[in-house]
Image (cartoon, rainbow, N blue to C red; front, side, top):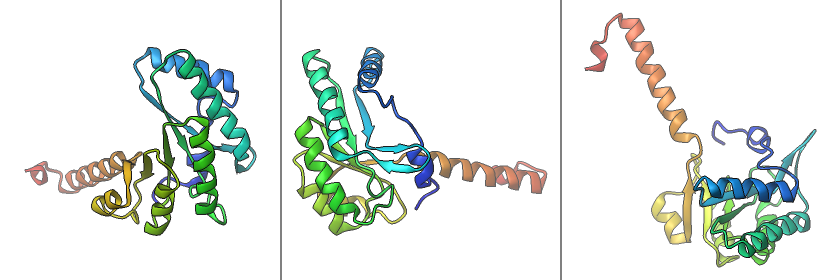
Length: 184
C-alpha cells in the first residue's frame, strides 16, 4: 500500500457516529459552500471494524432523506472500506454494500484501495452510481480505469507526500553543496 496505513486511514471518526450530528455537520459544511462529502463505513475503536451494513445503510438513508427534505444539494459519496480494512473477501462485501448504499440514497460510491481490474469491473457493474477509487502504486492507469467505468480517482495525500520528498531532496543537496547552484 501507499504511505497511508489502514489503521491511520480508518482512525478518523468522520463527522460523528451520531446520525443527527452528522446531518448537522453536513448542513454546516453546505452553508460554507461544500457540495459533497464522503461518509465512511469503517470505525476505529479499540480495533478497526466495519459497521454492520444495515446500520450504515440506515445512516446513509437518514442523511439522504434529510438532504432531500431540506432541498440541500450535497453529493453523498458512500465510502466502502472493505479493501482498506483488508477484509477476507473484500469484493464480495463491497458489492453487497454498494447495493445497500445505493438503495439508501447515496449519490456515489468510493472504494479506497481496490486495484485489481476484475474487482474494479465487478464494483462498477454492481451500481449505476459513479465509482470513485483511490490512487495507489498498483492502481491501473487512467485509460484502463476509464474503460472499466471508474468516474473519479482520489489522490489523497499522494501529491503532497511526493512534493515533500522532492523538497527534502532539494534541501539536502543545498546543504551538502553549501550552495544554491543545484537549483539552477
